Image (cartoon, rainbow, N blue to C red):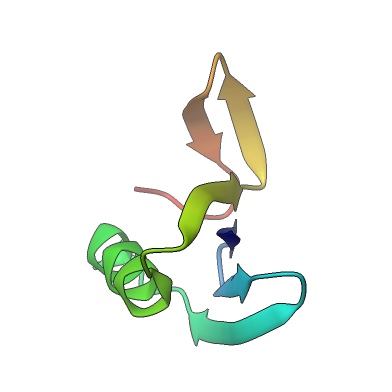
Length: 75
């Protein structure tokens, strides 16, 4: 059982694949013009058949599981 964790910021996106330890670590500069494509590519890179879930941290406002605003990242 493994998990993907994403930490999304206005300047950098950090992602890890965790399976009792960090298996893989990705750090990229946030590309505000291609943000969603960038997230998709990172998840594809880390995803395997053992992934049970994905957690996402954002510096902003989340209500009922919906991100309403990401500080420092205007989309």
